[in-house]
Length: 485
Image (cartoon, rainbow, N blue to C red):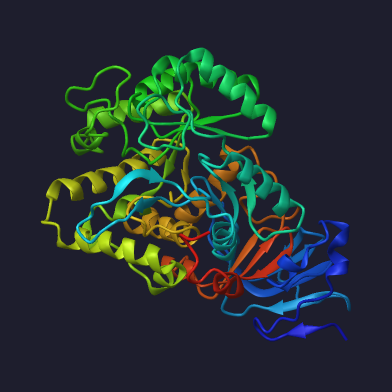
């Protein structure tokens, strides 16, 4: 008789059967595994496949040796197949987080009035962040800028070898930053030659993406982009000194933070200098239905520039929009929680500012306009800002805000957060959607996010390469630690 399991009452099968297609998993990983085996059949499940197509009801997904081998309504299985009954559950592709740092921003001695001591520090979260991403259903991340590059590279190696839990990782090099950086941990480029040498060195160390930052000059950006492209590596950017049109002309592949940091129309903008206004006037004055927006979107699409949406990190700019959850507070270390609540209280007591609400609305709507015009929108969270945007939780919140703020349907939002990211990375043949032959990177959700996008938070099992991880156990392992390590 074949084994059959009640919904989510799953026995973790012998890990030895998995050795044919993945490295042997260390005890530090197997303790979080809920289900595994050479063949797993998920039955009676709703499938949202990541392509934007309508959900498929009452389906069976057969996983063999880490791959999806069939999708059908057939629930029969051979004796050695682990069968999981998932009535009432939905399976979506693993999320592809495209702005998913492995660090946190700490403000030294932050006080209730918002004051803090310099310098601004960016501590690495090598223990908590990978677990939080995986537990939330993020099976692939791009780190989108590193402050501890060797840690990131070594962490990827350990995860890939099965010695630590975490998602697949696209490791971004240290920031391509110019002079006057507010971050003491960043190298400051001195010339285009320095930018080229920087790119060449980090390519030799195994990074797979680059990110230009706020104070880079046009000449340094152009040199970096050209050098990266010679290595077959893409460049994204959180820009300020360089405007979006200038970056597109330089050949950049991707721009971070939607349209929130474009400075092209900021009053007094000087070439190669980041204005203190940081793009707010440009976005406030850019009607999503207006000529400036239409022209900018066309320019970006014509130059094949993708846009990364990171709405959660901007949500706190509108105090009435702040989204606070107990699970976020529970994840934080006590000092991190205290500092975040100081900041949040200041946001809530700040006088209403219609301009900030207008900026957020324009930014969200421009992302929708960009997609309608044919642009490639991808998704991330950016765990920085006021401190309330956390790995994994923020990725889920991003999908919710694509619906609630930007006006996408739930199916469109899920596609942006899955298949679009895979497409940008050139990995759409293996990840990003649910189809036979693809990696079994899947998220089991107790609910129906096609009907209620907030159900995307109800993750119970996350499959990465066919290994099913227990979301609750992973989250329990980091409670009270995020912000510490």
